[in-house]
Amino acid sequence: MIPTNLLPKIEGIVVPAVTPLLGNGKLDLKGTETLTRHLVDGGVHGMFILGTTGESPSLTVQLRKDLIKTACQSANKEIPVLVGISDTCLEVSLDLAEAAKSGGAVAVVALTPFFFHLDQEDLFHYYTQLAEQCALPLILYNFPHMTKCHLEVQTVSALANHPRIIGIKDSSGNGVYLEKLLEIKAEKPDFYILTGPEEMLAQTVLAGADGGVSGGANLFPKLYTRLFEAAKAKDWKTMQRIQPLILEISKRIYGRGEKSYGYFQGLKVAMEKLGICGSQLASPLLKINPDLEADIQSAIIKISEKVIQL
Image 1 (cartoon, rainbow, N blue to C red):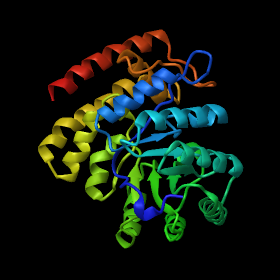
Image 2 (image 1 turned 45 degrees about the vertical axis):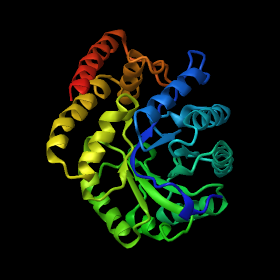
Image 3 (image 1 turned 180 degrees about the vertical axis):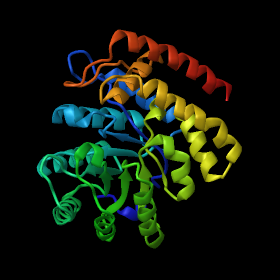
Image 4 (image 1 turned 90 degrees about the vertical axis):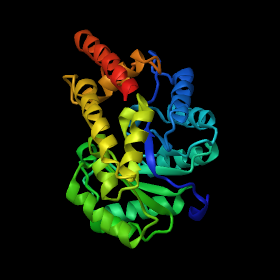
């Protein structure tokens, strides 16, 4: 295992990479290589594969391992790679962690287990067991909207004392919860806090978070790194120029679908239009209807023009 004091710093824009797929449900190897180099060349600070944006729960274990190998090779250690190992089976998570270590990832990320209704004692013991057996340092992942299981602040605080648990990715969008996490960080400065909702990226960085796991950086990596750097520097003028574009991406790309997973539909359609990878989603998710797809394709071209003009 990599000693935590030798890990590269995990901060800035850590992109939750999509998983490029072929029509037969197999991994798009060329698309994965293209996407990874697009992110590296775009100046992002890290890459997070097999998260929510990567549709991880819908992928076979073998496909996940193939993605780990291809993405890590393509990143070529130029940026740190984090790997999602979330699963309802502990042994599967540990197996994925071994694959992540072999591939060259620096840390792994795990959601709260879903399906069963777990209490905080259950979660504490689960993460402790995972951390003690895991091949790489572990980052907690709180996303109650998807898992229906909330990792409470007191539990995070207790887990932060574990030497192999190095941070948390919070996708709750709860500002009060974030402030309480930042109190933990005030006592443990090396405990990383990464936030999910990109619409709040600037505000969370200004508040003290280490960075953002921003899906839109799959499309425009330089735009999101500029926003992060502006927030770190308290460059209000640049933040005011970029923030409306971030909200426009959210509204016109993620918000056009009629399904609860419109975010995934819109993001992948936009990526296909930009020539990064195809728009295929993992079953059971369906592609967006053609009329809305045309709207998104039109929107991404107009947004691209605005990004260039910044």
